[in-house]
Image 1 (spheres, helix red, strand yellow):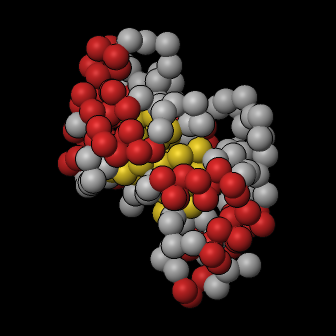
Image 2 (image 1 turned 30 degrees about the horizontal axis):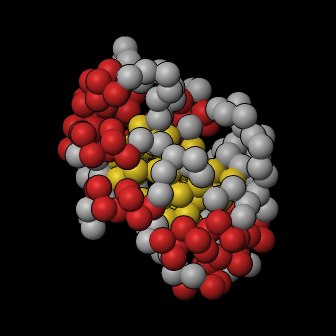
Length: 211
């Protein structure tokens, strides 16, 4: 278990639902206004880049107005096209060094590392800005192929300065062990968007701050 006095408080990292059209921009604004929220990840599937850029535009402006990092999931080319703050890469989505070359030094580049200490160290060596471990709990947002354990977070926190993100089925009710294990950020989607987003964000922040 990490010493909570030696590191910054855990922060919230929101991931979009797959449907970001319709009234979602208003929901995003409500969620961020209930914050603070550190970052928002734009995650859509099965649409072309032109349509993705169109959907991203109002969301990116909402994030920029609130000083929230706007991160694109999977696509280095979309991140470059829209001038996103960064990109989050799965294991099959491209190389950190290529992303850095294309997006520049200021881009935030994250990498999914499942429960692999080896993959996390490789990502760090390649120049990633954060590594993501998960899933920690069952989740309906995506099919879970890898389960992560709390010991991996603690091990990472004790040995490396690079921030780590915990993801997968995390709710206000079950997040405390993950906070104490050493997660710098907790990434959530369904736990926020499946109900009242502002209430959910506030519940997470209260749970993070509880002693």
